[in-house]
Image (cartoon, rainbow, N blue to C red; front, side):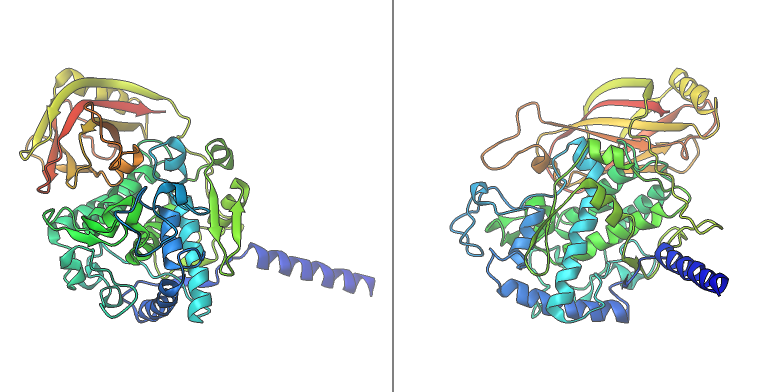
Length: 489
């Protein structure tokens, strides 16, 4: 009898252990254009109608939640939306916590913080809408299906609570993302697929933050396709670019949540792929960020980095499908998750070559010729060992925040241009503390872009060119100060 009891106990414990090791998933995030995604948008519309009716001092209100991402340092005239807030001296708890200040800690925590931010919004919408299985739909931009590149109808319904007029007119009118910009998104998505590192200047997180993340913010906010468009931005209370094009007003546009659900899906797709890597807990503790959010009942919650790490890598949701042919989760034959908790955050970067440039990037394509000696130096390193990680570095200076983007290519003789990356500038002025009371200095704002080019280089000693193409009609001056190639250990 004791043996039978012991056997039953072992089976019970084994069953519990198996259940705990299985996925924590309770919810599914759907493409916004699927029937399930549309049902979730209906729930979101119900919740946002209630949230918009709440006073801005209530933690679950639309205004409070938008301000957690960020808010202007000063409102133009008496604040018609929130009498309690006029300048940054009036900020309430957790306002302005988003990871946009240009620091290493901000870059490291960008994806994790935004994952937590929208995760809490989901909880509020479930409570306010009564839809217990609600999960934030994602906007599947970059898809080969035209319908997915159209902003979902409930987001552009003028009678609903998810609409704002301060968006790119083409999108609010139900037309797809213009082909030129769509191609850029698709190129960026494909380039991210094989990125070998989460952290670092050329890593997945920082490159995703640039494009398609920053790219889409500026596109939705009215830039790129028609930079002459301007809108009455109800958060700043003045005519300027749309809500999404500004860090300080982006969180107030309901499309923000669909956009960041897509950003999170891109991350999840890469994370569970063969290329995906994660930062270690030690790295996050060395560069921490404030994780402060509001519970659906209004409680103030603050998380340690240990608690954040557990939540973001043990999700209670999954996506209806992922990019890159990925599956959720990646599991080994023994049932354990096969993820490497390692990155190039602390790796050494060895310069192969670099050159000063000091030339403006204007309306005509910029070409930088990489000649024999530099090519040979690069190839010597590139071919010295398998899987050598080669990075292209571009140092630029901007004299105001550009509403244009710059596409970087490698051009080999008689070959088609090879896409390397897209330079975008969403949040540049915010990251450097520039506002109406703090102008950009005469020296401008320095910004560096780095891209892995190991998959783009050809094992040849032929000269090649680095091409930078500007798109947009903005008048911001951008100067290429330095260009170089490095090896990441």
